[in-house]
Image (tube, protein in one colour):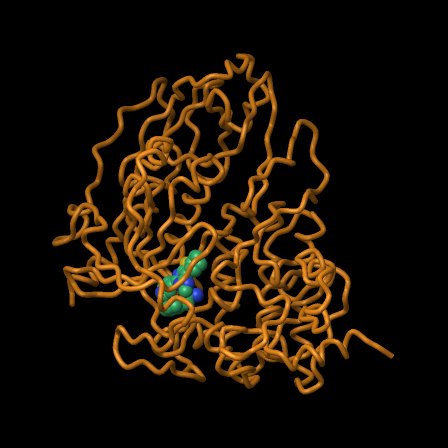
Length: 526
Ligand code: C58
């Protein structure tokens, strides 16, 4: 009998984490420097009346619904600024995606009003009734700003109010400055790369502190959809700043060609790198990481965020060995319990079957990805690793991987304990309704699962549990835990190209600048 399991056993001979010289890469080893899904198959779910979901961009991982009314083509948008509905004149509040913007004439309306718009689309740019948000408004991060953006709506004025005086960073914290700029940082090294972003290790010259800097070229993010994505990333950073297992934001700034997120630096490398050295982890270790990751995911879910890009590369280890998730570029925000979304996105090896089937999905996709990741920690390879595919070009494709994810029964290595096998089967259930973490009991089902019996969840969330492994670090700048593939990469940014900049609508990025007052005050303490 030539079972799938036999193929997996053969697959185990090669190593799924290919960066170690001499290792034979297996077909589904995605270069983790290019982990974002490069092609979008045309597999959307059933479109609603008046919707066109088939629009997607090359290299992107998202579809966005379009709503056609009276020649307008509306897209749901969350506004960075104060906006007023062209139909009812009322303010469009900045939380959730309650505003619609015509992608042609830029008309702004409430979602609830969009079907009532009588004015036909002029198909040309008209100035939207939009008033700039102040520096302490919805687009900014940190405790100070989130209170105001969540305030109850005040009575609505007939005409747009004058923009309030901007709150300046120096007013928030003594000793802090208004904004940062590229000149404030020394670029030390490239540490990561995605299809949109390059990530550098940098030093803030004034304090000599080290940060990670995510650099995004504006030319790659110049349509509404992507501006939204940048906004989402900022919002998730705001949420994340309050959790021990999520990276926080130091500041944001821009140049004519680029956006910069300055992120707290997590020194111990990522789980991918760790796995490359360990091959597979003892159950006790995998349990600890899976439990800390579960708390981070649950925290995001409770706040309406689907993370959507859980993978070994995005799980960082701090100097003590606790985990921190990084990269919120794929997050979906504003999701209430029971809400669903339909964007096709993620990293191939971790994409949940419901996304591949083109179904509407919710938080379940993160628990699936945790199943894949936990499997990788315990087995030392992907659950979808197939050995003979290396020799067969037909099977060496993303489509084949997706077919495997959708159809093949996942085999659990016999060397794993019954409880480990059970938790993997729980997370890797192809039916999201039956998946561990997704049912009625939801998170409690994970907490109470026999595999996690020894976990003291409250202690864990307070970082009171000693991690099973402490990254070896010789100094703040120790490069021992860094991915070797970037060692030769030049750290400089290419000079701005005037013709590229000329095509960028800089107004789309207004208000991107940000300084986290909490991190600033920490900085001043040292
Ligand atoms: C780490 N996988 S956001 C390198 N890549 C990244 N590191 C960090 N954030 C991000 N402290 C990335 C990537 C992002 C989006 C594009 C793809 C890469 C990060 C954040 C905070 C450290 C890193 C591996 C690594 C971890 C630590 C040091 C060096 C390398």
